[in-house]
Length: 263
Image (cartoon, rainbow, N blue to C red):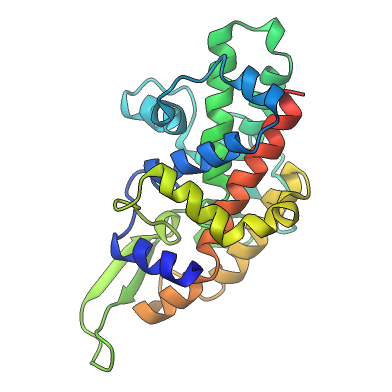
C-alpha cells in the first residue's frame, strides 16, 4: 500500500508552496481532528472555520501578503549538534519555539482575545506540518543545512543512460504535490499506511519529535550535499520508505498536542 501511494505522489511532482502541499496539510489536520477527544473537537470548532485551507496555510498566506511579523526561518527547526533547540533563536524564527509560544496562548485561551487564540492554533497547525519535513532543519555543525541548497539528480528510463538533470531545493526534497488526491483521500491513505503505528508515533514531547527529525535529516545530509548528484532511483529509494511515515507523525502528534491543550 505504501509503495503504491508513493508512486502516485511521485507522479504528481514536487510541491512548490509549503513543507508539503496545501491538500496534504489539510489532510493532516483532518486526520488529527478526527482522532481528537470529543471535548477537544468541540473547543477547536469554536475557533476553526469550515475551510481548513485557510488554517493550514495561514503563515504562508501572511508572507504572501507581506503582513508577516515573523521571519521565514519560522518554518525551520534550528538544532545544535546534539539535536537540541538552539538558545539563540526565538518564536519569530524557529518552528519549535513558535509552537511552544502558541501553545501557551491556547493553554491560557480565556486570557486572550478569540482572534489571538485562532492565530496561535493556526501557527501550531502550520508548524507541526513544517517541522516534520526533514528538509526543514538547520543543524549546527552541518554547514549546508544552514541554507536551502539545491539537490541535483538525474532522471532516466529504466535501463537507459541517464540524461535529464533535475533539481529540487532541500526543503522540497521530501515533498510532493498530491494533485490527484483530495484531503479526505489522504486521511484514508495515512490511516491505511500507518494507523497501526499511531501509539508508537505519538510517544514523546515536542523536543523529542524535533530531535527525531533532526537525527534523520543529519543522517541524510551526510550524502545529500550541494556537490552530490543523485540518480532519480536513489532519490526514490531514500524517500519512498519514509515520506508517509513523517506525514503520519505530523498528524498523530498534532492530535496529541491539541488534546493536551484542550483537556
